[in-house]
Length: 117
Figure 1 (cartoon, rainbow, N blue to C red):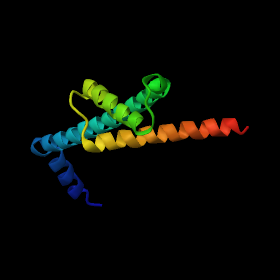
Figure 2 (figure 1 turned 135 degrees about the vertical axis):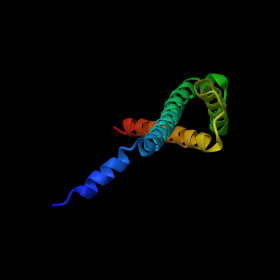
Figure 3 (figure 1 turned 60 degrees about the horizontal axis):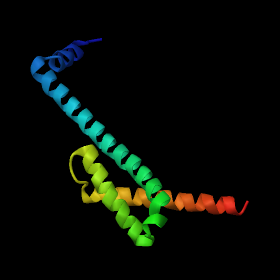
């Protein structure tokens, strides 16, 4: 079998002029994925913590319904800026809002399920 073509491809790929841009692209992609995952994890962690905080204190603050979500978004924006060094973008706020609503709904469902047992 003729393996000359494989040696040629290996020679091209290991050439310094080709290898450096490939490494740069792979590293750039890795950094981008890491940043996206970090941002998502921060949003999820902050949302869970803030929902718990608001659920513990909303009665003493005298707020209900939409006022709780307004308080959530206010606290979330401040905490996100502390973590990331910038204000959250609109899609990040929307992700946090959805996460908060999901957490509240799960808490309600589990409270109702415990109530009927």
